[in-house]
Amino acid sequence: MSAPITAPAAPGRSRLLPTLLALLVGLLVLGAPSAALAHDRLLSSDPADGAQLETSPQTITLTFSATPLDVEPMARVTAEDGTVVFEGAPTIGDHTATVTLPSALPAGTTTVDWRVVSEDGHPIEGTFSFQVAQAPAPTDSASASAEPTTAAPSSATAAPSPSAETSSTSSQETTSGMSAGVLVAILAVIVVIVVIGIVVVVRGRRRRD
Image (tube, rainbow, N blue to C red):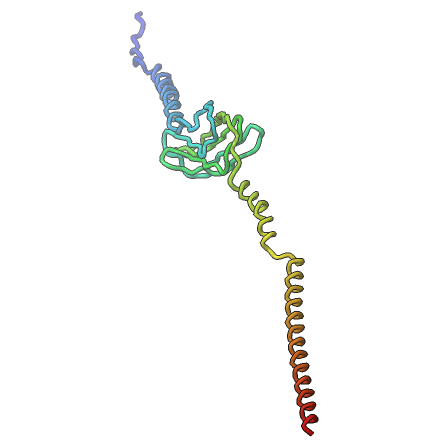
């Protein structure tokens, strides 16, 4: 008795599900770097990381691959001694975030910490540093504050002192006294002349009588 003849199994059906799973995993793996590359990234900074400057810059500019969102950007500029020179929101521009320093940086290493929101909505952050060789020169306000001290003696000299006022008053009183004395002397002379005249007239009448 011969064995029954069975139909052959459909080729490839048993391998279809593993193949689909492998393709799905491959797409996920290939898509992950694409999603990571979608984030903005820092292209450069001015001053650059590790730069050595003679004097302090007035601004610090970060340039990105795309314009960051103006959503709570943050920057912190710290001097070598730990003093925070700037902490706040940088100004967002075309592909840039700019920090305007309120004062000159001291000599030494300056560290810049930054955080912005990428164009795709993801926050990105980083840190870089640079060197400043010279300390800032004295400001004009310091020299201006010293000017009143030098000008004070001249103003004090120009103002009349109490002793000067007293001497001036005394001189005026002396002048007034001298004027009164001269007037009294003139009156006395006139009285004497009148008396002499009366005496002469009386004597003349007596001689006639």
